Length: 68
Image (cartoon, rainbow, N blue to C red):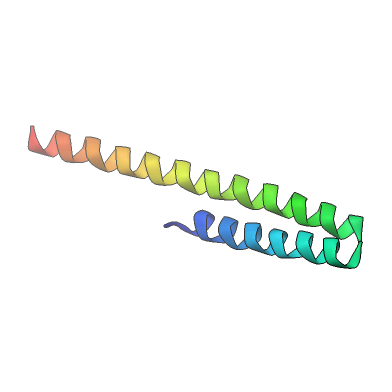
């Protein structure tokens, strides 16, 4: 895992907690902020996933070139 994946996961979880807390107390603004945080967190996780795939692809190509 890279830092974007970790930070995104934490933000996503925090958003879920905030959304649920908003539902419990009946605060629609907190619910919306929680949903927004979840979307932001998931986006950051996906960025981290993309970086991980690119890094793996780069390493694979590098290894292939060195073996040739």
